[in-house]
Length: 290
Image (cartoon, rainbow, N blue to C red):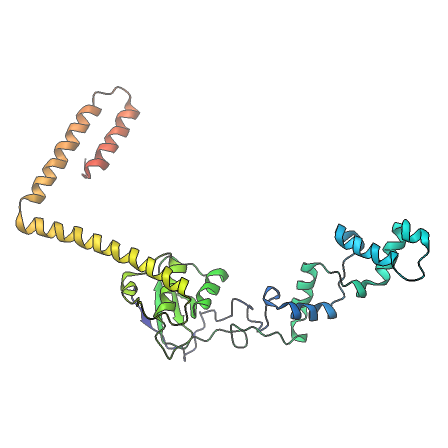
């Protein structure tokens, strides 16, 4: 498929514009929060761990705190009773701030509107492509992982009734290095028409490592194109310089096939004889019709 023009100013009902990082909520996902932001959630959350959910290290911290509390008698310090330590923990949950990570994440997800932690990858929960051209993808499926990969490269991944495409979310400069990276990560290869766009002295926003990886993939692609072109040129030259070459090669294939079949016909095992016959067919690249 070729690149296509698409007018993003029009309404596209069949395309999902939700941000894959926040799923359209416009708030950061829990795993994207900074440590200080997670601490702010902890200060608000009251979903503390139950005693039986504490690990050994956490139980040790609670026990040591219990034993070192002022006015604690000597027997409690030396051999504290389990029920006393548990009661002390349950009376001081807020002071220990021990949470299950999943419980914190659920609390945050259910109360995102109470925190000003907005997604940095989108605007109000949606992706807004700005360039009216879309680049085709042949081997890429639509899922959150691939949509995030494309977005990290500055591209919006979408699907319509013609296939899967990606379109730039920014402009104002040559962003071909980002397109090369997106093809490399999503498709596992860079199309030859894009491989020729690689420039040694220009990498836009890419790191030096990504620029090098793009170069390696472009090299692999173009070398494959060269080999294919050379083989095609050889075939053309043979045809032009030796008109009987094709007929001669076909005759050689038929002779090889007949010779192989002759050997197979002497084998008693019918299954083995059939397998060898198929092998002869594939080896000689000759079509047989009844």
